[in-house]
Image (cartoon, rainbow, N blue to C red; front, side):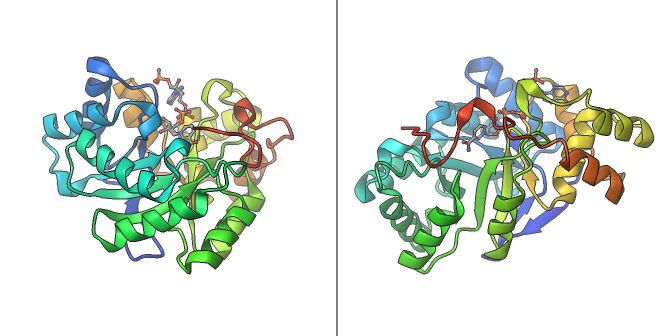
Length: 278
Ligand SMILES: NC(=O)c1ccc[n+]([C@@H]2O[C@H](COP(=O)([O-])OP(=O)(O)OC[C@H]3O[C@@H](n4cnc5c(N)ncnc54)[C@H](OP(=O)(O)O)[C@@H]3O)[C@@H](O)[C@H]2O)c1
């Protein structure tokens, strides 16, 4: 299955849907990631803190898909925000993955109470300059965090990966990203366990278009201009989650799904101003 691409503000391309790998570990994890590549995913999202960079690298080697056709994204953890730690951490990620270069590297969380995310950003800027990382970005950054790293480094992230699903549609952050030319990537794009598959706007759209509710939610993501990274260990779901380019939601369907947003829609309280993830 061929997936259209987004062009980033640094001129690089990413597929409009990627594959989330959180919780995929060990032999079962490698099998699930290899299956995702076979089904057609060409962007794999991992992180130091998922403790599965080795599995991602092994799946890449086992799969028949050439390395150059796959984008690999990892994330720098909070405990490695110091400049030298960030450089070392990235080399260690490359070693675990068995790769010479990351296609995308993100600061996982800003951890503002530690207040070292500007140092971490400077390290990513230098790693990009030195050719170890192709594109650089952030995750869970607010408007203020974005403004600060851009002001202090002069370099705008290519991507900001944020929580985004129908219960948490993130209109302000999507605008803050778009105003700077930053591509919004969506984590927990299906809403994970709270998945709003049975909500009438989702179920009705699924019936109207002859697709399943997961496809409606991922199509909604793409029509927002976001890049969702759904995780599934199930080959059939992996396939259907990628198969969202043959139908289009109407403006009314889009608006009804976005209106599912609610004040308590955020998953596990991950507010970037207060949440610490080391
Ligand atoms: N940057 C961050 O701070 C951050 C935070 C959280 C997550 N992430 C990234 O985002 C990725 C995706 O988020 P996520 O894993 O939290 O949640 P998600 O992709 O929204 O949901 C995954 C869950 O939904 C199920 N599922 C997948 N497709 C389905 C379908 N079509 N119908 C019904 N159920 C379906 C999966 O079960 P099965 O596996 O059984 O199919 C799994 O339990 C992660 O893997 C990770 O890479 C990043």
